[in-house]
Length: 135
Length: 150
Image 1 (spheres, rainbow over the protein chains, first blue to last red):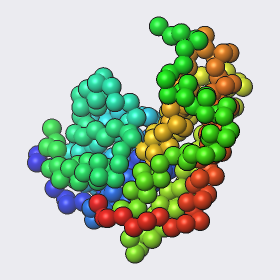
Image 2 (image 1 turned 120 degrees about the vertical axis):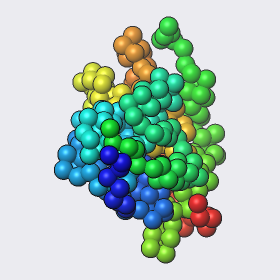
Image 3 (image 1 turned 90 degrees about the horizontal axis):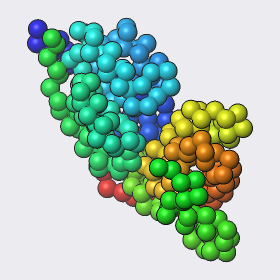
Image 4 (image 1 turned 120 degrees about the horizontal axis):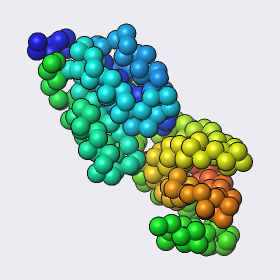
């Protein structure tokens, strides 16, 4: 079935670092979307268990309780979540990390540190991504 | 292979800086332009964005440093690595490069290096954070310059 095509205005933002999370929220708001914040991987997981109404998700790679890459893996197992494009963020720019991100199903990757233009460009690109087609 | 006597070039510079108070006092701890560039996100609805980011950073860094110090005393390498990694990301993003460099060294510290370098690195981190916090406090007193919107 083609995406569950509700034009959600909400973006899940999960990062345990309050500074980075605040920057991500500002970038999402700047694009006219509504952020839904999670302070760690566990909270993001609980949100995703009951809510799939997201245009996109921005997840930190390394978070307490559950990593971003684990969340991407979980989203891949749930049909209702598979359509949500995900961007992973990490301070590790190794090819291995990038490869794992895309292999797991992420559609974008933002390395830290980033500047405001880089951040905004990445979020804009993520939000312009068509919803993934559910398997 | 890790050489416990080696220092990364950047870290060696920091150690020299830490030992020379006159030289350190004469220079700014970090480039404020990077932090101020996030003023792009200020708006009439969010006029104090950069100040909010500074406040969040100082709180977050205090918490991370507390975890790092505790992890060092309890030999909890994983907690040390996680806290250092987290502090590295926000510090580098806001332009506090020297703190990010120290965190990277802490993140990569290996067992043979623990006794040799951990105390020095933590002392250096505390020293650099104190200086950065002083500069951040000065920034809180003065509003950041206007920045173009992203």
